[in-house]
Image (tube, rainbow, N blue to C red; front, side):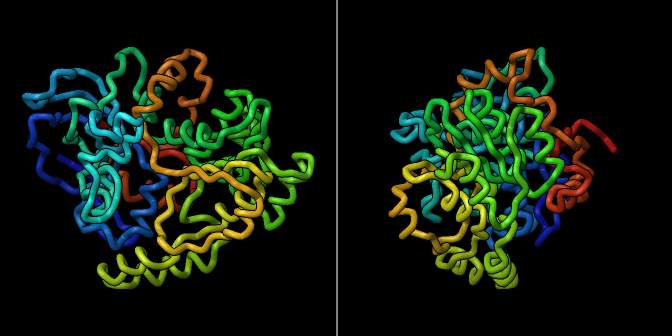
Length: 395
């Protein structure tokens, strides 16, 4: 089969690799019909390189048709249409029963001290082959896959794999009070959905984003938008009676604009041999923190900052004195997809499409276009916000 593979810093290629096969009784094989590039894939593309190996298959936002199931899988059959959550969870351990599927005790990557395995996301999360491919092996298919209907097109359901529940969790974790104000830093795919979810739930939403096209898209959903500048926290306070927003979602993460020291650290780490680079990332501050520090500055006293953006440095500096003095609440973590699916299915199937899942995709192509579209997505060229590959398309 064809698959998008990691080959080195800012280098991916489409290769012919062996088809996946059933390895465990709880496995399934799906034929991938749509698979997206996530903002966190860019971390592998340019930051988390020490944990990648040439040939690793990328991708953790996938859906498709069941082709084969293992002997212990009774909830699926050949021909079912399914969305695959990005994390791999058993559904029955203590953590899964708490709704913390990203901490699944069966699939935790204990040798790295990390949570549940993720598709296509480096040795930190189990080196599980990802879904930017023609076929995907799905472990724990007796629990993970989300069965969906056959009437609506893929793009109505695809984002249930990651970015839509990630945004929903980010807003839920932000604990916005009734009638309150939510600020969103970053209007990439997760930030777009977080802002739209905020307005859908009746909050005032103000978003901060340096790219004009992304600001215009969010404004279509009643979001107030601000350009990123050095005094944006002061501007947010001016817009909220001098206090700052009640809650902030950081939808940016480790590659924030305006973080020259963090960028330099990431560059240096990228030049080290893998083992030294891993050690540096596990013991040093290698994140670009301007978005996070901006959120902590802007949020009102007693407010909540919710992190949906991915961070990777262990010793990244934090303004703890100010955080303590402002009595802030901080929530974070990979999204527990299955926890939120029942809330989201009615919204993605609603003919009115209240969250705009139909207009987020800016680029669609076959797998062969992956190298160019990864580059465009990273560089934000050509209005690129969300890339979806359809493996059935032949170039």
